Amino acid sequence: MERLGPGAAPAPHMHYCAMVPLAHWIDTIPFAGRGCGLFERPRVTQPSLSALHTKTLKLLAQIIDTAIEYELTSGANPARGRRRRVKAPRVRRSWVEPEQLVTLLKAADEYHRPILATLAGAGLRVGEALALNWRDINLATGTLRVGEAKTDAGRGREVDLPGGLIEALTEWKAASRPARGSAVFVTRTGRRQSVTNVDHRLKTAIKAANEQLTELGIEPIGERVSPHSLRRTYASLRAALRDDPVYIAEQLGHTDPAGRIDAAEALEREQMPERAQASIAWSSHNPVPRPRSSAG
Image (cartoon, rainbow, N blue to C red; front, side, top):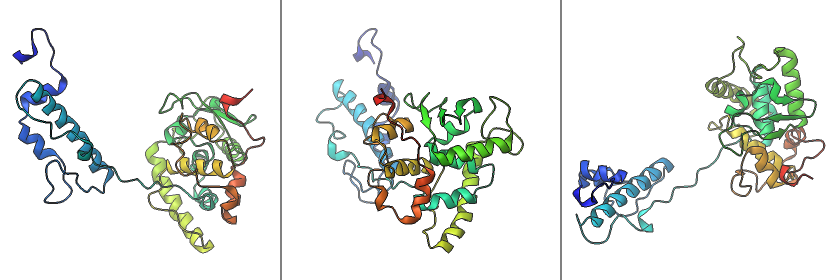
């Protein structure tokens, strides 16, 4: 460490240089199959493995850079270069198809039906939905305000509610008889719903819905569907209704309308099967809203 000079603080990865032999880092680079050379690009099929490979290689490159800088080794850094990185395979997203949505909502129990309706009808993340209090929802104007959110763009945003969701929340409010300002979504014992409970109950609802969908000749809902999948369903329905992409991004709490609407870009209303029209009608706004940024 004397090479750093008096008073100089070593970079964080210098500690790794000092404590961990280089051979250890070589051994920790993940390989996908036997016979893969140290700095050859491996064939990786799992996104998590490709990310681990890239992060490990990046740290190793920093260590070798430092070693070269302080003349602990010589030559080019073999961990540098674009060909060293692994391109992560495209992840196939899951969502509930529009023609499956109404059946899924009907299959859910009375305590979770309004939650699933809010995820699909307002595009909220499950954590955002479960954090709602009744003071955040204005059924008269058909809007809700998101308090807690994952991103700054999502925090405090106002979301327009479709007619089907307004009806579902109105029925739920009448049935639950909440105190003013209390949690919107509660359990049978009156406690605020949890993400884990919603996830489990969604699986139960999917199983019941798939029995009905099979009878109707509609493809069953996939096993990979999660509460977040309904957020993608929301984007699909809004695109099918020809909503402005900027408006959809605002409603979702995104800042990039082009890259973050997962399932929406290829869907148009006339291309959807006739059996999806019930979900489209359920998701309709009246009147049609505009992006907040372009409002007069």
